[in-house]
Structures are given as C-alpha cells and as structure tokens.
Length: 190
Image (cartoon, rainbow, N blue to C red):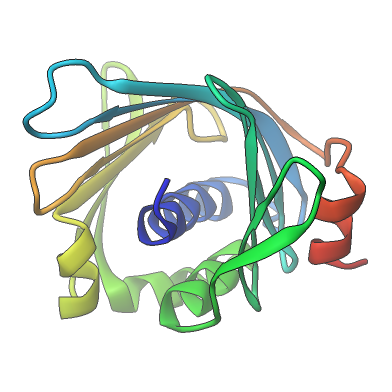
C-alpha cells in the first residue's frame, strides 16, 4: 500500500474506532482482508493480515499474504520493516500523520477539518460517509465509507480520483493489544 493510501486507511480506521467506542484510549487489534481494484487491470490485488491500533502511539499493519510485510505508522513517520526487522522510513511527519495521530487520540474535530462526515445507518448497520474538504485530501481520495454492526468498524471503502478502489474488511476486532515484534515495539515506543 502506498504511504498516502495507507495514511488514509489509518485515518479512516482511527475515525471509526474513536467515534464509536466509549474509550478511544483502549488499543484495538484484529485481522483484515484488503481488495484493491486498479482501473485497467481485470484481477484485483488481495492481501490479508493483522493490525494493531495503539492510541497515541500508532498503527501496525502486518500483511501476511500474499507476501509478508509490515508497515508501522507513528506520529513521527511511516516505516516499512524489512524481513530482518530493520525500519525504512517511507514518509516523515506532516499533516496526514498529524491527522491520524489526532484521530487515534479521539480528536474527531480534527478530522472534521479535513472531511465532511455524514453518519447514517442502513439494514446492515452504521455507516460513516466521508468526503474530503481539502485540496490535498481530494488529490488522493474521492470518497470513503466506513461501516459496521457493533462498536467497531467491519469494513472501509476508499475511492480514489484515478478510479482505483480499495475495500478493507476487518474481522476479529477486539480491545487490547496483540503481540508486537521487537522492531514494531521499538518504533511505537513505550
């Protein structure tokens, strides 16, 4: 996942998690399946893995299939971990990381500055519909939706200006942290 798309996914997950649970300081972990459809390519790209969301510290996005990889988002940057555990910076700080960090802390007003947020429900549960307000966000995102049936998001969908689409399905989402690798733990801090 490109850093910009990854940051968007993290912001969306953080928004859903922070807006729907009583205590946004509680860590979450679970599994995900991501289906990415790229305009002009018939077959979607499918990946699956685990995530750990640690409010105030960051997000671990660990892809297990088809190829193992880990990306860690912290307030100081986005890092890819190579197979040996060495961290490689993909992106430094900036507005998107600040936005993600504030969302992880439950500051939903900060997200309201970047997105128009509409809350609703249908026969399948709750839905958050997000439309980017800023030119920077509109360059990477046309629209996004997040939904679920309980206190946590079970899916997120991002539509890009290029026509590419990404849908992420979350499962087994539960409060608490999951074990971190030493490299992940070092990047996220205490």
